[in-house]
Length: 377
Image (tube, rainbow, N blue to C red; front, side, top):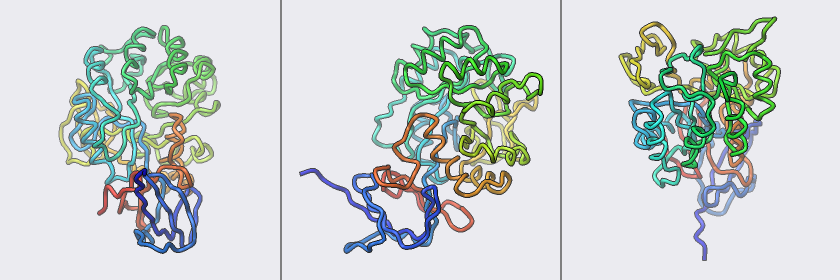
């Protein structure tokens, strides 16, 4: 007989992402929601009625956390990030590589085993950001390790079956062939670190690119005669990755994005310094100086962020004037849709039981992954 792990959670307020209030009981069998009912169960239940329960956060663009960096330590960093991220409400993430030597990248990709049984927050795959991008918009990437559009190199990157997203600048030589190849292999392509024109963005979109990496950052500014990546991002049906730390994106610009909330994907772009004190850290081959809420290279260039998903969620509401429902989608459902994962991100029957429980100030109090409480304050 198959063993069944059954847990029941009592909830009084939840965003599914739509808001529901009342007395609800969520039955979870082997990590998956099997029933949501108002009928009180006969047996024991876990009482979450003092919290607001929401789908857990998903970060599809994060380099490191609390002293660990995937580009530096590969699988070891992924394990540590997995154990530490639930305190910020994160239930799943894409560990993200900056530009490093190609052979080193392959070695670290090979080390990352998605079937490892000891994860807390679940790595859904890997995001390779620093390969097929434009030196003119390098940001805090080391352009010595950029790759021109080379399908053979793309094959080598995805050979380990763990890459879920690549950032590509569509104007670099051979990029459209790479985009087409990646999409055929069910890998999401995000346009970023790019000086592309509107027409080049259109070509990438027609070839299957579906996201924009940290919109407004490391790309040409919007111009009414040449709308560039920003214009294409808003005009076409792209998912829009946003670093809502108020440094990468002005609070006023966050508010301008509210009409696009069904496509906004909250990301952190966090580095190893996140949740640590001010000081000097690393990102790839560069020293990064963390002070006054930002991480910067010695020349002042922003170098990732020290944002966490719970703070970004609050910023979307506080500065972007997003409704709670819109912010919930941006932090959970939309990131998953951008990588074609529909197994959770909503509180409904047949979805994985991945929740974050917050207080009235939307501070994280518990995080539940596959029906198991993995963090509680």
